[in-house]
Image (cartoon, rainbow, N blue to C red):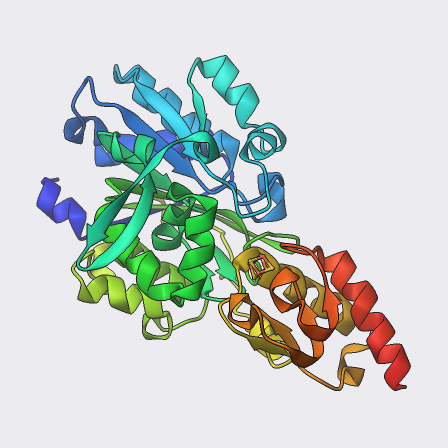
Length: 370
Ligand code: SF4
């Protein structure tokens, strides 16, 4: 297949053996034809937290291993895995817990903790963005996100996975900018040359996992907008509902899926089940008053509210909970979550606080109202 024809295609392979699936997929695409032999290849998985891929939060190490082994058999030896976990989490711990330390040792490839890297500012159509140097030095970027839900942006896949290419203070700043626009613009500055989505196990609601659903598929393509529009559809959303997909398409990062003809299923006779659609987060979000909250903070609050829902207590929460950087230096009534809301009457400290810490305060609040 010609390069230009490939650009408009999505490749899907079903199964539960990621190493074999990676090899089948890459040999079908013949990826070796598109990469210079001495290129510095960077693999960017999603290791947002230090939880194994079975949690539905992080990229399968077996899938990454399959990709690296395939590239090595084709003579590519300049390969590194790069990541910067979410605000408040350590990348080195994520590499260890997620099984990457072991595969790196076995395959003789470096793991780069981007949190230790230097960075520079880039101007993208008038928007200034700070991006890690080692990301910008790559010759070929393989973006390997997880297909999963997100508590603020509804879904997270290829476009949002690049948030691991920016420093923590920039991640926080992205939230003050509304998240969607900077995510789209970041993808204009950092090009994903190939996207391989781990659709084996994903949490349909939370980016940090916990309720994983078996989805048994790997999705690949060259256009992050195309991939994300397909991912949104799989998770039950119209791509139009996901703001950053729309913006990325508008600024020329790529194009949304226009026709089913663009989807090439490599093994049609599969027994993989349809992915269930869920909008649980939207119900929990009714209890939140949010202004520019970081995902780690917001995710902790969503988890806390979900636990209270399971215990049958959530209906007794009388007032909305405030959260986010927009509440800094503001004196507010009621409950605020995170150090940004320390001016509130009642506050859960921490940056970000854990779900457990939030639950304790909310349980006390509910009990005092009864
Ligand atoms: S308290 Fe929460 S919203 Fe505020 S900066 Fe920390 S993580 Fe972000």
